[in-house]
Length: 403
Image (cartoon, rainbow, N blue to C red; front, side, top):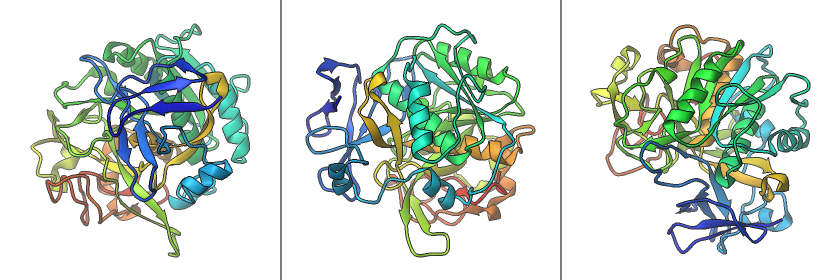
């Protein structure tokens, strides 16, 4: 089935799946950086109702609002050579050949996703990755209290969950994956799911690719679990007061970059992505940020970053027809970067205490991103520079020595 997003200019739209309305409330589009007629569209509500979070995934559509399949001939013509697969992601961040020893990355999302296991199997097979199934114990899917009765599907969050499990699989092929699904997108449900994930034996990282702009939510106990790297997306709307839970003092706030292939020894270079969230939140500044010269008196976002630009570095994921999706799709947003960084922490195994502090003591082992911006507020909160800056934090993974 073809999936189409109907929108007018940059206005809100809804998703049609096989002719049926499928709830992508408040979806909105951002203009493409390099490809005429290609738009990056939020798959969840851009402005969630109070007390709720929105997922941060953004999918590429063509000028008619149809989600682009980058594996098709027409899709390759529309968005040539700018999406990345698993092997390219590992190469870009010097993760090739690294293993976690089977550590577990947990993912917290809202709603169910009935096609999760079958879609993940297709993605991993297509990318030459070993199978990861519930039968083998590699993949576990639970509701917010750890039970097996899963919530109903949601069209936007299906794409989000597909991106999350595919990104973790790509960065860390031998990681086990725990998906904990909140009953809804309310913070009450998501925080219950967070605590459930943290209580699982073997979990060393939890990725949260969602948030609520505004930064006024105080620190919550659900995101304070020493010994676990809790990562969260900084948002996809550029400079803002702070996206929660990324603005939580104890969380690893993950910003975003645009990733470009080049002829350097690394094979890639990065700039700050124009959509990457940054800003000063409402929560206390952690001690490890003190020497970063953020100009914020509170917790500043981001701490670190990874590929997030849907156009340049968007991951080619698989969300199939069982889930009401169209198959292969190119997806980005800081929803992409958060699970990548969670997987890097799993590869490093360095999660004692508050893992957010580790990159601040290991900046020479990161790729420093020094160009690009996400707004007009200048250095350092909007414009990339040498050292810490708002859109990209301290930089991106160069292997795991920085984590």
